[in-house]
Length: 368
Image 1 (tube, helix red, strand yellow):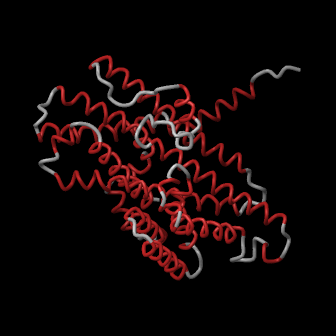
Image 2 (cartoon, rainbow, N blue to C red):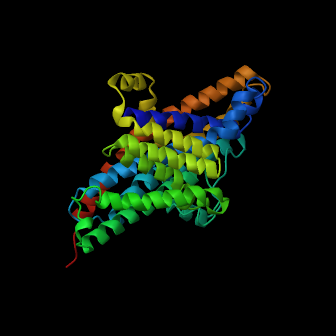
Image 3 (cartoon, rainbow, N blue to C red):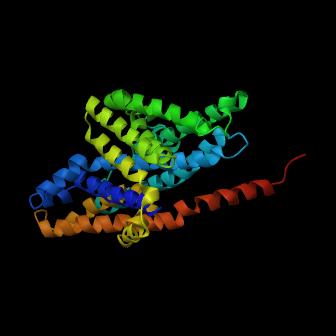
């Protein structure tokens, strides 16, 4: 899916650049030469997270559509367990990488490159992706997103499983799965539509809820609706309805982050209509390849950026625009390169590790 991977790749680059601008002395030295660009990245770069939220919702809807075709009851625990291992194992290993890099830099320079782990409760909260609920200080920038992504997935998986159970217990004609559009997915869509609307007009407007999935359900829900509406008969009518929903939410309370989420959702509606020539163009941009490793880049880029901000000024004059600009470029390239290494040897290996651990457990002797 080059369009989705392209979106993820572009958003990934913006997030890395945002953190490079927001932290450390390199961007301060370059600011006089590129004030508008760096100010824009500092103020609005964080909104690229909305792209990840919409894309995650889109892919979640795709998965639920596949599960709806199965006759057996879906286990919420199994869905959540798979998602947890998919997110948490690379996340925790990336945190260990960051701590190790920070310790090494502290030994070499005597300075802390970035926040170190303060306590075991902070560790445990991050391992179980509960740091946002328990209000534990983040170990690395972006750690909150991993927790929120897991919460959103668990919430939507719960909605799907409850609807599936309700349908199996209700034997009336209109609840049968072959009564399109009154199918299982139609019931799930109804709940998603309600949750998305409530999130857009209430939860997303109050920072008090930003530690919970409800605050971000608006963008995530738009992604889910984009998938379902664009694949229905008379898709143009449904997509027009989605556009009206976005316009209403912006009229109710204009937010630039909602503009980013809405535009992303509407573009994704045309994913199935994109020509092969456009796909070829996207592949030539190399953003598709970057999108595939975007989660790994997202996980490892922060300690690398902080390392460059710590070490590079030791060799370059603090007022050198060219020297510090090259440092920013080197940090960006190193983040992407290390992201690929992390994806190749860690993230992509997680399923194999889990299968091997399961085989080892089965091979253990069982006491009688």
